[in-house]
Amino acid sequence: MNIAPVAYRYARSLMELAKERGQLDATHEDMALVARTCFGNRDLMNMLKSPVVNADKKDKVLDLVFAGNIGEMTAKFLSIMVRKNREAMLPEVAQAFAELYRTHQNITICEVRSAAPLTEESRLQVKALVEKKYPGQSITLSEKVDTDLIGGVVIRVGDEQYDGSVSRQLNDLRRKFSENPYVPAI
Image (cartoon, rainbow, N blue to C red; front, side):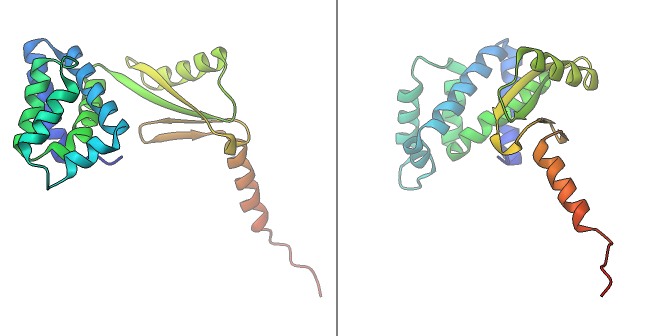
């Protein structure tokens, strides 16, 4: 998902406030809950985006949805978002906050797609490979099984990707054979 720059501004201001008050980890958990709730509830998202529902009702709904589950600072932040007519951006702000938090904590997400579930040995190999490339970073693996790969693995960290899948190798061979310079004599 492409996150708007304004979402980063709101997330950055919340992060600075959370660091200042020593509530960074708690706020991170709160914003993760906000993101999961928003993305998991289509009706909530439609209500937040609706121009028909007034801001007071949106604020009350958010209070009811998150009552007792998020901290006071995060609840006030959500109210500010509603007051500024930015409530539709809550999921984006939550995602931006998660990215800023990972950067602050030196956490790197490594997405691994494989044709079959990874073994523990494979996980350790991937993690060691990424740790060598990104020293000082804490590596978190995000695994996904993709049978279209046929075999092998695709590792993605940020904008870098290593594609060691069988499907990629077959496509490379297909391309190479299509460039065959042989022309039969007529």
